[in-house]
Length: 387
Image (cartoon, rainbow, N blue to C red):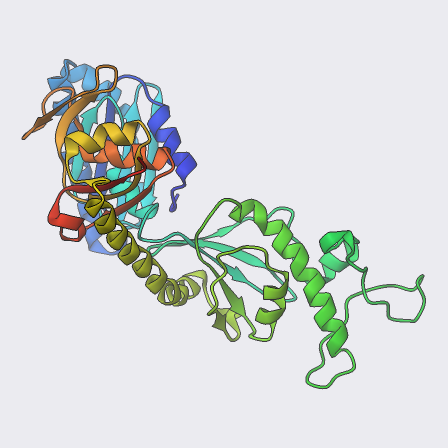
């Protein structure tokens, strides 16, 4: 898979019991450099086995525990990679993800999966959508800064003719049926055809397009409902104002991608759309920093790990900046509300920055996973509290 959803993150958090192995590694996609992939993999598997032994496993038990991961190691697997590979192993649980992130090499064994390296896919590196419009075909692309995939649409008409042939409902329950060509209600009905500026059919095609786009908007709501991410339109420019009239999604971006985009690849559209949405994400992060500074002045913010980790667990963190590529080892006991910090990982430790970030997301907060120098006050984390 390429993109990671909140639901999949929750699954990784909630599914395992017992010890959990998390492995991250960069992967090469093409050429002779792909030969480095199995070498890195074997080194990380060896590190994971050593960590399991430190937790009380025998060497044989550690090898058996990691057997599902061992099975990945064949030539065909290494020839089909993205920029990074994430592997998760627990008792009865095995997941791996080819992802568009350049991970640092890392093997972690704790009582939960280590997920912080995945957070750029869910946070400030931007989930956004592209809606490709034409009379002949509708496509919805789910994108991040790094990657794109097409969503397989259900309950969304594939094209205008199909939409207007089978759907007699409309916005407010009053859609008209297709334009009748032939002058009687019993004659064969189909949508009009746009013949250019000044054509007698111009008004008809606009009405048909509006009806079609109402149906499209209604259909894609199941994919966008509850999200607050940008939606970028792509297609012939005259379609945009018609679609905007039908649109009910509040985060439709004003600027779109125009021209004959049907011949563009999803990757080309994603790259063009990223140029449109990147300033939106940057502006959101700047506002978040300003909000942190205001909250800090009102004593409603903190860079104290011992204060922030319990607050994240109990749902008090509204907004969190956390440094990627940095770990703070220790453990938090929610029953006794105690926390310990260690300079080096000890048996039973977890990365408390990872814990704070994941709990913030699961409790409905916003996380900005950024480079260390971008965290306010140059701390490993910086939190704004709800109360």
